[in-house]
Amino acid sequence: MSRSSAATKRSARATRGATGGRLKKPRPAVPLVADFLTTLETRGYSEHTIAAYRRDLGQFVTFVTDFAHRDTPDEVLTSDLRPKSVFRFVSSLSASRFARRSIQRKLAAVKSFCGWLEERSYVPVSPAATVSSPKAEKRLPTFLTEKEIGLLFIVPPEPSIRDLRNRAILELFYSTGIRLSELVGLNESALDRLGQTARVLGKGGKERIVPVGRAALDALAAYRAVQTDREAAGGALFTNGRGRALTERSVQRIVRKKLAEVSEARKLSPHVLRHTFATHMLNAGADLRAVQELLGHVSLSTTQIYTHVTTERLLEVYEKRHPRA
Image 1 (cartoon, rainbow, N blue to C red):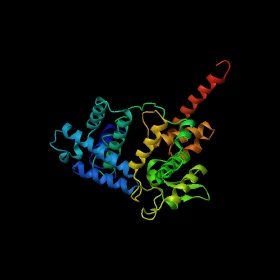
Image 2: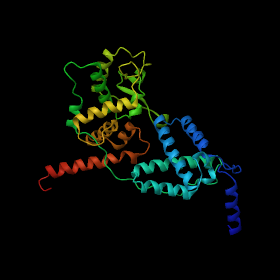
Image 3: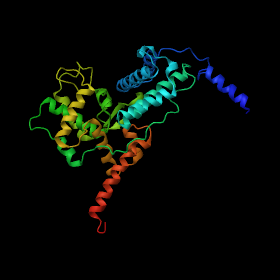
Image 4: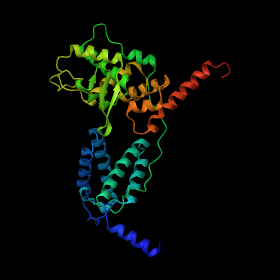
């Protein structure tokens, strides 16, 4: 290809959007962010993910306000979104000592938004396309030992409805490895007690079937036997004292409090039980791909972090038990 024809193609791309139409005139970025978030809703993204995108993109547009010498975020235009502004945004996050994982998430939001702008011909090329994400810190997930798990499920001799509910929540998390949002979204119809399975709605609206252990089913049965407000909550599996479905924040508080009773780890959340489920499964000899399916991971590489945990455990056992270790 001659230099003149290549230059012509570059020029044409600069005046046409990615969809093939002519590039649209510069538009205010703020309402386009709102349109983008609406698109995510129609694609089945969770409320939690959309809220995170809203915060991250709001932070990005605010940064561009100063970088592009605009008075307010409402004055930022699509023409102000350039590779240099994205690069400087990431640099500012690093300078502010944001964790690498947080920077990765914020840049992912910006990349998705900019890619969406390119698809709709608001920008000729995504300004975030050439900006690299910082390498992730290799941190092993926090998980409980089998002894700690045993202590976690102890209930008082005469348990209250709340005690029975909380134990059922903990048992279900550990038995299935499901996410917080997946547990909160469960209702009675999602459980197949005879088949010992649950139908879970995961990320992106993807549905999967997960096995539920006998201990979890027994804990659920004990709770449901004394629960009197299930109809008022629209069939939600877990309810609060006012008969309303438990929110994610409420479950987080319940689990964090119970985990703090048995573990001294600094970061305690429902995800710790998900990590524990995967780690204990692999320690017991489960196939990595089977664990991937149970967790609802799209990529096997996401599940492979647990192999580092099990490898450390194997080395520990080897050093303790092998005569010449």
